[in-house]
Image (cartoon, rainbow, N blue to C red; front, side, top):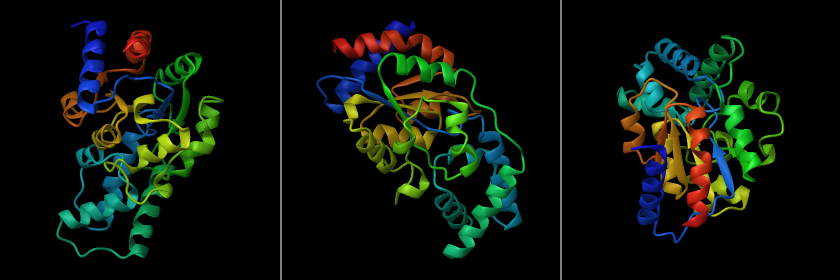
Length: 249
């Protein structure tokens, strides 16, 4: 199946699933880690290290499968799974601070190849752009304007500090839509993580997964991605067709 047929099928399936009469894209919400920054290998390594230092079993696969959770939720989930007594808020803050220190010590994180051109293409099509992330990693948040100058509405970003329930709960993407003044059928989400895809799907947004990590792409489809691409450039090449179809549906 070529991209044209794949996109047409995805749009039809989305409209049947949601019951919306049409898609009228006005904005795009990007995840940050693994979408804008190639940060997940470092996140995974720092999570594994800090969890081991605190006697908690946690693998790199766990990190990728749970990408998108807030730091506190990740720690609680891992401790509960290991049968450990739930940590206090202060202990959770200490563990997460340790994780951030390890991450920051690894140096500056590069951007994901092609993400800048994708964002530029979307802006040229008239879409407003912002970010919805389960992270509170200040070292990356502070780099957004430097790495992607003028592309994202920084006053409308949603982070782990803004929500009560992180991904896979739809709250972050619902909040992102509200900040952008957009309805679900006017929102395109760009994700890379299973929990992020699940959250975006549940918010009603049209969800595109870019498989930038080691997981099988089927995981992302199974969690509700409307479209799956292997790279940012592949998605950028398909954007005109997606835009054409959503304007005519």
